[in-house]
Length: 124
Image (cartoon, rainbow, N blue to C red; front, side):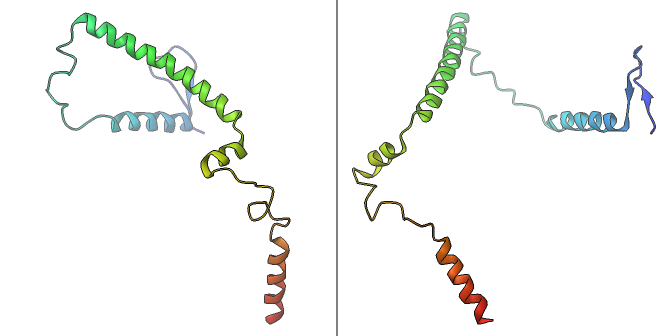
């Protein structure tokens, strides 16, 4: 395996062909982010804001970052505590899911499926 030392470094760190590939891929990814045209010369939407408005805007962003984390925590907690039967009742109205026709079937249908497979096998 051909290896070479990093150019301009004093450390004995070596670049293997695999590292060279990763480096090339990273350089390619950076090249993709380069836009072939200039960005718009329009002034920023915030150029008319005063320093106080900018400070308030930054405070607003920070407040929503913190609120977003807390709201996400509350959302996960509510999902963990969710009662499926209660949710179905709220969505579909009150019903007794322990009696037919809404009650779960006593079988899964696997026996019926095997019966059909046996009939199909005997036809051949």
